[in-house]
Length: 417
Ligand code: EPU
Image 1: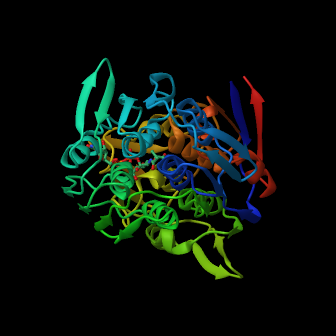
Image 2: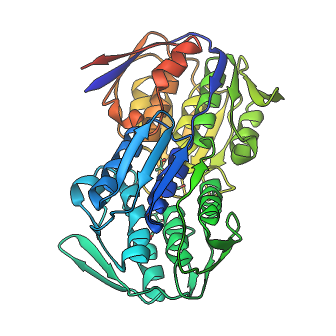
């Protein structure tokens, strides 16, 4: 297993290119199942989760070629409707093949994802939507078996605006008989991106990116060539890394509107953010001010940026109240940040962070993707050496993170444990 070693204290400077979005690429790759033939998806980041999706599509019968920033998926011979436990347990987003399989083959047998480090994360709303569309849903031996000769359009109200649930049901509806309306749909940019790709395949979708999505089912879809949007969470993560090191960095190839909430909070801390030749310049300040934040569905502050922002708050001036409303156990980074000298108290879903003058480097353990990003950010600012073990967590969602940070002047390297 790899570990990441950071010698803190270097100010970041220079430019970094933001990679394609993991959470847009995953559903778009799954959506290729809906049409027979070869689709080519561009701007796909080089990540473990993308490899896992490739293995899964392969297991279903697709031919998958992953090249630099480009993935070809030939779905002509998809014959196996089963997503096995071995793959689903390593990546929950595997559940995104559920609805495309039912829509294309009339059946799917997908291992139920268990709980994960950040919460229980059930998929009851995905299944409720499928039942509303006339599918038979059975749970047996840890698998969910869904059958439907042809799905029927339906009105589906989601109790919670679930991201992958909205994506799954939107994909199901593209090939259903009649009109589907998804109410209280998630509005994340990744949903709009999936909808754009589906529309290019011939789907009829209106309202993606808003909380009511209307899908008019069609008889078939065709393969697609599509380029995914830049990763707004990677952009936000670099923004915080630039700020915590009091650096000055430029983010290239990002879409600032996609992380307005993060930029607003960063500006409240005093960090300067300005548009510069098609990119964004982030300039840290000597003493960032503490700010409060609450995670919310888009366009609110993203839960996927909570851990990174907390790292910045550990050395901010004053007290910050951070409330996590999306997942019930997303404070795993707190214990590790405390080991670096951070002053954080957790009560229920709220963390109270009192800024300290400095963090000190320490041996740390990565627990999940965004917690790992938070600890790397903390390590960049800390005095001395930080060693982050179980680096595979970071490789699930950040492309070449140590190379990108090194290019910005960070003293960071990877070693085998
Ligand atoms: N929920 C239910 N029932 C459902 C579905 C969701 O109760 O059927 C609950 C969840 O337990 C959670 C809340 O609804 O408390 C929101 O979960 P959501 O379904 O929106 O999350 P997700 O679709 O499983 C995606 C991202 C996550 C990101 C969340 C929230 C992908 C592949 N994953 O997960 O990304 O945190 O939305 O924005 O898009 C990450 O990249 O690190 C990551 C965890």
